[in-house]
Amino acid sequence: MSADRILLIESPSELSIDIGRVRVRRADKADSYVAPMDVAVLVLHHHTISLSIGTLRELALAGACVMVTDAKHMPCALMLPTQANRAAASRLRKQITHLNDGLSQTLWQEIVRARIRTQAANLRHFELTGALRLERMVHDVEIADRTHREGQAARHYWQHLWQDAEPDFKRETQGADDPVNARLNFGYAVLRSLVARELVAAGLSPELGMGHHSTENPFNLADDFMEPYRFVVERVARPSAANGEFDAPARVAMSRIVEQTVRIGKKDYRLLPGVRETVASYVHVLESSKGELALPHG
Image 1 (cartoon, rainbow, N blue to C red):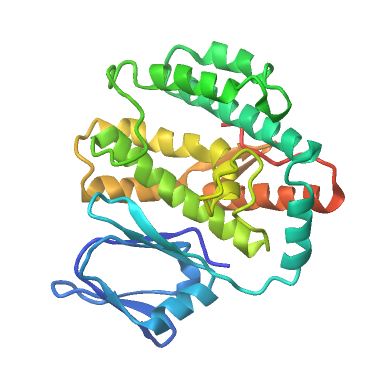
Image 2 (image 1 turned 90 degrees about the horizontal axis):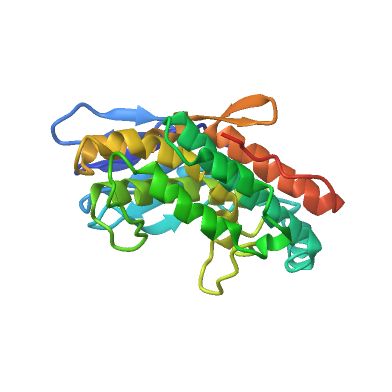
């Protein structure tokens, strides 16, 4: 399994394998090298980048995923590793068994509560108002979030998170090019790739979600487990948005979400090990039909 590094390539480059390392060759710079096992996500962010099949193969075997972005800096393709996991078949059956039962509904309740709890933590982190209402709302989330507290919390959260910096801010997920939404969408895309990668490595199907059920979404489960980790992206995006356009330095800053620390239980984790802990807890619940998810709380 590769390390906690996001490799962002933003200029004309040629990637190849040289003595087991990925060589990045640029016209105006000395060649740089990185071990495939040190890459969690390779982000290809320039239309003239070229790379060999051998490079893709070595990255995949090391457990890395590869993301390609479009002209608006948003992902348009994602390659996930598919290393054989002997437990994959049995875990897929368990995912299907629990797809719409009480277990999945209870787990979704846990996820929604964690998402709202981390939203409140972010407001307190930035010394903004509105956290107390979210903290109270956590206790109102029902099984399967039947009363839609997730949506209510989101409206309250977005209103208060940007109340001083961007008072007219409106959350947009598709085609947004304003600096704030561009940062958020890029950061979420990187986070999604990290979560999907951990799910596949654990022998789970990222299509089979608990709270997300779209038949057109191949990453429903990844979107489920992204929820309690979104606060990390927002915590990085808010201060950086004051610097203006979503340019190359801003993209580099957003790619450093992997350096953020999350607290799960009484332990602190870097982002990727934290996600891995959450996925492992889900596997335990699937296999034992009991237990709770290990989720961050800010």
